[in-house]
Length: 339
Ligand code: TRP
Image 1: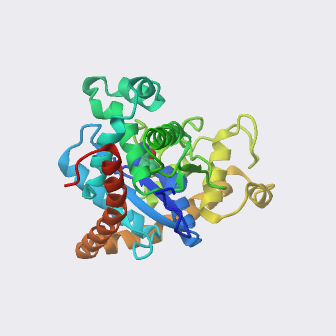
Image 2: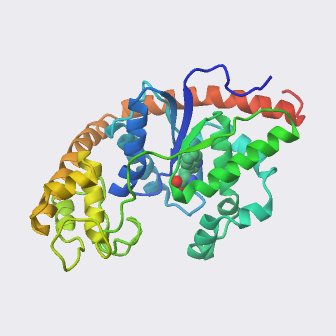
Image 3: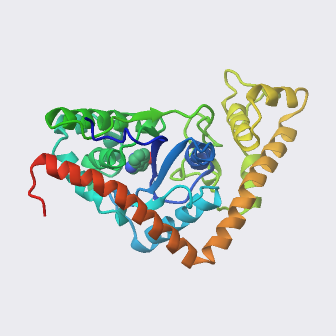
C-alpha cells in the first residue's frame, strides 16, 4: 500500500513565495490573488508558506528581511487568505524543511542542478556570492512540496523546471525505497496573465527594475500608483485593443481585467471609440479600488502584531504535524536508527 495521502478527501496544495522584498502588483495578480481564489473554492486543503529559507540564498540585511517577511505575512491575510482555514507559516519555523532538504540534496544530481535556468540567471546576477544554497535551491523546494504530499502546486513559468525536478526526485526516492511521496502536478490557474513592466511591456514587472515607474508596489501610496499608470508606455495608435505593437495597452488591459474581473473582449467593447486617457483613468481607478482595502487591512494588522504572531505560530504548528509525518517515514525508509 502506498504511504501517500490517499485517505484524504480534498486535494492538497502547497504554495510558496519568498519574502524577498516589497510585493508588486504583478506578484499579487500572478500569485497571491490566485491563491485567494483557489482557497475560496473550498475544494482544496491549502498550505501557504513564506519561503524564508530560500530567501537567504541571496544576502539579506536582517532588519530589512524581518520587515519584508512580516509585511508579506500581513499582506497574505490582507489580500484575503484565511489562516483559520489554511495554515500560513514561515518555512524557517518548520524544521522538517531543512531535514528533508538535506535528504533531497543527497538524491539530486549535480548535472540536474547545473541545468536549472534560474540558477544560471542568478549565478550571473550574484557572481560575488555564488553560494551552495543557490545551487541546491531546487532540492529544498522539492522538500517543501513533498513534505506535504501535495497534489498540486501553483507555479508560474519560471518555477516549472523546479517542479519537474521535484517530480523526478519523488519518483527517484519512491523507486529506490518504496512509495513514499505523492508525485505533485503543476496547477496552472485558468486566468491571470503575467503583468509586465509599465515602461517596457515586453519585460516582466519587477521591483528590481532600475526605473521606479515600471512597477507598482502594493504598499505604495495610491496617488503614486495612479501617476505611474497614467505614465505607462502605450503606442502611437489610439485604440484600446490587443495586437502587434500594442504590448503596453495589452498589459494595461490585463491589469484592468485582473482588477475588475472583466474579460479582454469586454474591455475592448467597453473602450470602443474612447481614447487612451479615458482608459488609463479607468485602469488607475480599478487598481486603486483593489489596493485600497488591502492597504487598510494591512495597516490594521500591523498595529495588531499579537494577532500576526498567533497566526504564524498556529500555522507552523499545523504544518509541522503534517511535515514531520513525512520526515519520519523518510528517515525510517532510509535506514536511520529511530531516535
Ligand atoms: N521558488 C519559489 C519562487 O521563488 C518559491 C518557493 C519555494 C516555492 N518553495 C516553494 C513555490 C514550494 C512553490 C512551492 O517563486
